[in-house]
Structures are given as C-alpha cells and as structure tokens.
Amino acid sequence: MAYQYKMKLTPGQKAILEGSEGPVKAKVMETIVRYGDMFEASRLVKVTHGKGHLVTSFGLSLLKPVYRTMDELIEAGLKVKDGFTVDPGPYDFENTPCTLLDKLLLKTVLYGKQGAYEEQLRKLGLVSKDAFSCACYFDEMGNIPKKGDILSWAESSAVNYANSVLGARCNRNSGMIDIFGSIVGYVPEFGLLTDEGRKAKWKVTVKTKKKPLPQILGSAIGIKVMEDVPYVVGLDKWIGTELNDECKAYLKDFGAATASNGAVGLYHMDKVTPEAVEQGESLLAEGYREYVIDDAELERVYNSYPNIWRKPDKAGNLAFIGCPHLSRIQLEDWADRIIAGLGAAGRKKVAVDTVLCTAPPVKEAFVKTARYAELVKTGTKVTSICPLMYTSNPLTKSKRIMTCSNKLRTYSMARYFKDDELLAIITGKED
Image 1 (cartoon, rainbow, N blue to C red):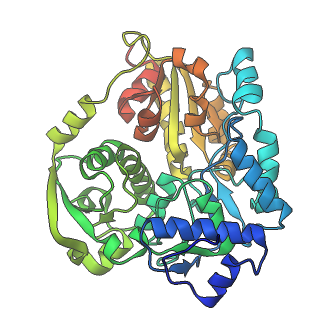
Image 2 (image 1 turned 120 degrees about the vertical axis):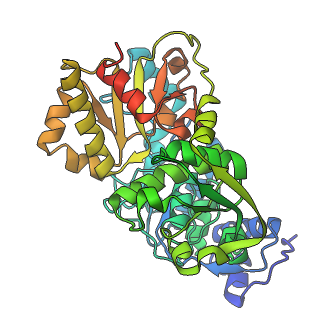
C-alpha cells in the first residue's frame, strides 16, 4: 500500500514519490516526506545550496544498514549532483598516539569498513579526498552557503554555524537524512527553515568584566536554553561587530558548545550575525525568557564539569585541541603559544602528547610553513581526524585525555581545561 502522506506535494515531487525516476529514488523521497510529516511540515522546499555535508564519516563495522543503503543508491545510479563534504575520519596512526593493539582495534574491528565506506562516498559525490572536516564552511574547504540558502546538512556544529553565522537555513538533521535530502533536492519546511522557527525564545545578556571563553559561554547557554533559539546581547563589546577570521573562529567554538551542551541549532548575536544585524531584537519571540551571564555564572558552570577519568587524581597525559577543527588563524595561534610557552619554561618538548586537529587543506598549507617545522620539533602533532572518533576506541579509556573543547568533553571521557590552563600543562609551566 502506498504511503498516505499528509503534506502538500507539487506534481514533480509527487511524480518522484510515485516512481517516475525509479523505485530507489521513490524510497528516498518517501523517507523525506515521512520525515516532514513527523514534524508536521506542510510542504517540501527546494535545496538551494546543492553541496551537502554528511555527518557519517566513519566505517564503523556495526553500520551494516548504512552500507546496504549506500550500495542501493549507487546501484540505482543516484548521487548528489553538486557533491558533498563529510565529517572527519576516525584515525591517523602517524599523528596520534597509537599502540599496535590500538591500530589493530581501530582498523580491523571498530572501523573495519572505512576503506569500503569511503569508496561508497566517492561514488555518491564526495568532492575530494580532502573533503573530511566538521568545519566544511572554512574558506579552504569551500562549502560555504549564502544567507537564506536552504541546506540538507547534518553535523550539529556545522548546522549551527551555517544557520547562525552564515544566515543559511537548515534543521538539525540526522545521518542519512542529510544525503537523502541532497539527492532528491528537497527538504521538509519546518523548524529552523521557517521565519517563526528562527525567532528567539531567550534573551541572553552577557555582563562579564572580561572576554568570556567561547567554550564556557556557549556551554552555559546550551545548558540553559536546550534546543531553543537564544538572542545574545553584550558580547559585541568583546568580539566586535565585524565577521572577520578571529570573530568567526570565536563563534565557531561558541556555537559548537551551545549545540553539544544543549541542542541549539541557531543563535542570534546582537550586532554581529546577519539576521541580528538586519532585524535586531524584533527576532525575540513573544513571551521570551531572560538569562543574565556574568563572570560568577561562567565560573559556576566551569566548576560543574565532572572529572570522569578512571584515575581522576592522576595528571593528564594526552591533549587534543580542535573540536570542531581549528581554523587557520587558530592553528597558527596555538602553534605560536606552544612554542613561546616552551621557551618561557626552558623546555624543548611538550610535557604531554599534544595533538592539534584541523581541516585537511588547512593542514596541507600549514605544513609548508617554517612555523610548522618549528612546531613539530616540540613533539606536537597536527592531524585532520575527529578526536571524538579516536576516543571511541575503548583502549583510550585508560588514557587521561585533556581538551579545551566543550564538545569533546561532552561526548567522551576527556576532561575540560581552560585554554591557558591546558597550555600550562602542555608546556610544563605548572611543574
């Protein structure tokens, strides 16, 4: 029996659903329509930024239904017309601490399908071998929607950035929904695709006496508002109003924390983000709630983070920096800080294994510089993997991983440290 859909479809959409472009594409369309019906969408809208972004980048051996579905799409000759980028890969044996047992477990047990899955991705439209990054919107990655573009993306931090900093429109889709929407070229119109859904239910006022760390500020807001849209005022005092590289890097980390410590898919930053610049506080929904953040509130949130290491009294022995991936300006800044910090401490090598994570084309450009040559002499590594995927290896549970990423802290056993605290540990300054 054919699916009895509720939304209104155009003749072209209905034809695809009824099999005009083949039975597999009909199933893809039916999935998208069912998804929309679930959220009471009244119609499908055209994807206007055709380059997709997929969250599923890892060949986890247990994902057999995913691989069967991908094969079915390939056999039907379907693909994403404008191509897509994808989240980072799960391992890099050269630039992350790995024993022989780690390598065996990662490559043959956990991610034993990685090679085959990447081949599937290529056949379905992966834009290049360097298209693996959670920050697909970097200039170097080239997947940059325009304001008002409709997307079919997944990856919470990328969706958050696209909605907030770029002013595009995308819901927090799941894996497979992302590629299905990109293949049929339509997504259901609900939530963050609508003007009403982009209204802010919270007004968050920042009243700090110094520039707040984006990871902790974003965490505080995400924990408070959960999936609601916040309108943030007062931060322009610290980050300015120009969306330059430094500001965008700050907003990337801020947004990722709101998306992982809560479920924020969109925020408005007064005088900074596109819709807030155009519409101001008219973006506040009727009956909005208020949340005031000062230095004491940020310290309270920071002190609430647990230490869930198996040996919580021991010192950390591995640091991951860059979740989401570091931008070029952030990568260079961390390199400079590590090199200068070691010099001040009278050391040549980092005190703990240290890994900086960035997008493949950013790394490719960075490794050609004198700064990179100096950095690697300190023992610091640069990789393009997802550190969260690295921590999926159960053997890492015995490691005491440190990070300045609230996203990595939230989804793993890694312990969060403020940037300066982590730098002091890495450079041995706290010894």
